[in-house]
Length: 477
Image 1: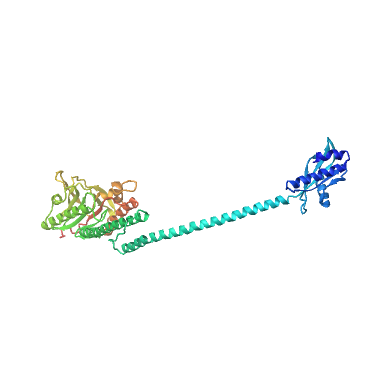
Image 2: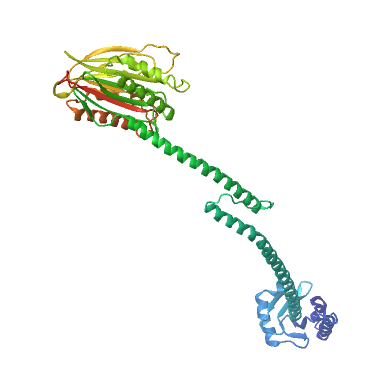
């Protein structure tokens, strides 16, 4: 359009400019666009040469100022007119060749476009509203169907769950005969099967627990009987002798045992034995051995040979069990003589006893080992000899007998208490009277337990002290 009005504008034939502007508006109207509101052509001095009707003078003046700021000569520029029916003014220079002969101003309205956009947005919002309605309707139907299905499934699940609860209550009340149907193929069926299996296992466990309780009661009774067969842990005094000892099984019943019994003529019989292992079978062997000693001593009050005692024990335990339980044993008979007391002893594989000689003021002056080896009792295939011997005892001497549960007590790391520690404790002891004899026994046991540092014992422990006090060596026992 600027090119169309350039020649008339340059030749100052201003009447030829207006038809061009009018034709432009008519062409716009013919297209049905109606965006062009007005057209204005000015000369180089800014004087209006031609214009179409509807020009907003104030608005155009404001647009002129803005177009000038935008340097309209550089090309096509635009300026906005908010609040006017002409929302935009476009400006361009009119050139003839390189010479600027005027300027063209075009007022444009976007109201039609805005109306079309608003209509399109309204139609889209209506479509979206209808889509939301359909979506809500479909969602509501899905939720309703889901609620109905969940309700039906809940009704189907509630019945077996109630049955499981009732059976669990009966089971808790002690009725182990109840079972539930487990034919369902779902998780409830698996749960019912697990419930029935649990009920079966509980019945088995309760039966086993009843048997175990009965066995525990019998074991407690067996322990009480075995402990009643052993000498009391208090100091026993005879005319010329003092005896104190202890026997602690590693389990409820043990294979260790010991006894002392006065004989005719002021003599004293002392026996200590250790059946292999510990538990009921070892305790039965120990009881058999002790019964043999009691029977022999009762039938022969003049008994004077400790080897005979061990032979009697061997004969008794060889007839018990399948000969897999052996027994080490030491028997001693203390007999008063004109020169003091004579110790006659026999050893069948038992730990070598110690002999403590009392020095001044009751301290231990010397520690000796009574070495006499032999084979354990209870197995005829061994056919071994029994070590025997005699020893003269001075007044105040202490015979120390013990099982291997003392020296073989272990720590968690496997270290043994050992003979060296036992000899050191015995050498530092005092044995002036009965109280110190009891204190020595308690001290040894306490040191053994402290050495183990809480580690459970794996073998029975027996420790016995017998002291000679021949104030009346010839008196009756």
